[in-house]
Length: 193
Image 1 (cartoon, rainbow, N blue to C red):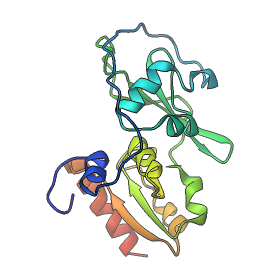
Image 2: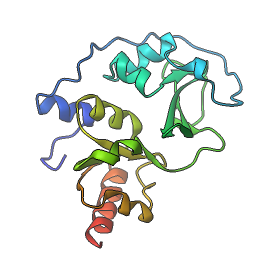
Image 3: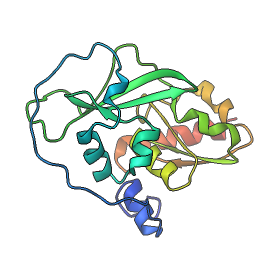
Image 4: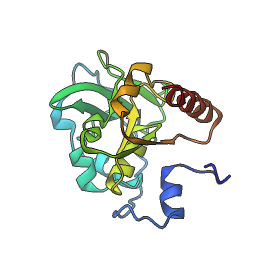
């Protein structure tokens, strides 16, 4: 944080005295076998393991279902929509699966870089741009208008600046070096228009 504190969105919300209206559940340590991902399946939404994991990250059941978070039997699924159109599905490594040696986050083939929760911009006067989908959902759950580039901290495209015309923009990136570098780059981009 600019105040010199470390931590993510959850830490900031706690420091500000904002409650996310959820109980935190402990995620059970269980291992799973990989199953191939052929296409997004709405039956993954609300899977009991997804509910347990995402609740442990501070999300309410309402937010889990609203954002259609799920589990495909191998990884947690974070789909992203613009209107009714599915734009991408991010796959988050199951922390309990010690046999998954791939990166923590993967995108399903055919996923496109865009703004997660972009539909929230339409009626917003101010917006937080944050680094990840789960941070974005947590902020939205607490009443903030938030978006996040699906392509990661450096995934913000120059042509997206127009989507924020006449809005007050707050940058809310992680405090690691990659997050701070991306936030500085994004600040310069917004300052140049």
